[in-house]
Image (cartoon, rainbow, N blue to C red):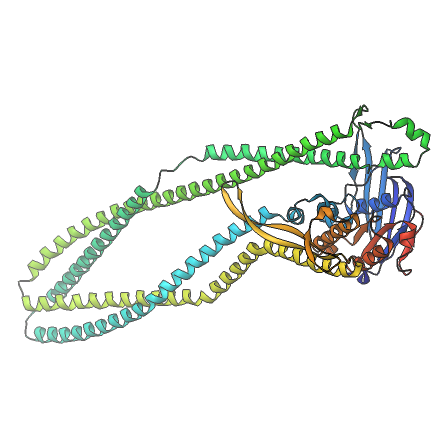
Length: 627
């Protein structure tokens, strides 16, 4: 999205903001130039735009108790209210952004903008660029995706095992079917033999039927006894296996102490975060005051000189908290200690986060062990109950077997050969039935395996998707860093050519990976090294430092770094405005070229310029003379 794609005008009205009593300005898409001398409320108006977009930087007019900014864009209206509450100014309303962090860093490019100042101060450019990225959330996603990938890998391993087992199952089915056919043929022969026996033996139908019934029941009972014994043996083996696994499991540990410590650590981290935020605001406020960027200072510049002389002594700095005169160096020294304290707190919070992650992992491990123990104990109890039930049934069957054997002995006073043949025939029938059951079980298992194997494509696709997501998460931070370096180097090269800094051959950022310790872990992080190459009059190139650059050159590099962040984080999709101020260090011709270059990236680009600098810009750009 570029300025050319925005068709509606934006209207900004501000009341009691900075040095503004009341104003209303309509802005066209593209470039709007705020043309005027110093102390004409141009910066106050830029801060009003920022406030309507969600920034907290707009100052309340010194003699007002309340202020308001309203932004109308299309059919939507956004507001920001300012209200004095004792020594503080509270903000409210319904601004364009809920979180202005990215816009403050890379779209609202006033003189105090961190991205602009980072180059000149030698700040950590990588930390500044990655500040809007929630790296902890990305690491949490990585852990979750790794767990899901392990689960899917396990399922695929199971499928590979099943695939290897499928030929064995099919071969087992063929063997069982052949054995069943053989037993059926043998049974048919036995039945023919029985018919031949019965034709030669004089026996009443009642006696024959009774003997057959008793023998049949006896074999049923014997078959049931064998089945129960096999089941008992299997159940006892399972119970023993469960007992061994229970014995191998470490004793379940109480996680209450860890949970209690987790609660304490989370509370400590929350309290530490609150202190960090509060101290950060104190540091930023005092830095702004030292730089003179306050509403009160702007208001004083508009008063008569003799009033300013009476308020500000010539040989010191008035403390803006107690009103006493102190040396500016004392304030800067105190701010230095605040920054050291802030850095210590941030490191302490990071260590707390690492310890919290470790404790949460320990809780998960203990929970898994406890659940495994409970499952094994439940299984062991269930097996014990089933063993007891089957032992009772086996005892009952054994008693019945004895009764039937006794009755068979009584009936065997007839033809023993015929009885043996009947027994063999019954055994064959039982065997055929058992083989039929085995065949059905085998076919069911084959069907289950084939059904599971049909899921391979879905699982592989799901694993591929998880792997892609995991790779994307693992490389997201590196990709953002690489993209930022690439964008910076690309635009820096273009602007050096456009702006005509002849004695600068090249300015570029090199991304270097280093290993650093975070808590107990050693992780790889990127670092940005800024390089400056100059050329001598005889054309010889040599590497220089940022400290040796002119103020104009440093300003341009800072602006290009901000633009790189703007593009990498797609800030134009977050907020339509980009504002530029304090470009006086750059000559008018180069300012014009710079504005032309930036125009292509922001839907609304609002620039505050001195008249002589504004006159060098394209006359087609909209100009605002009075705020």
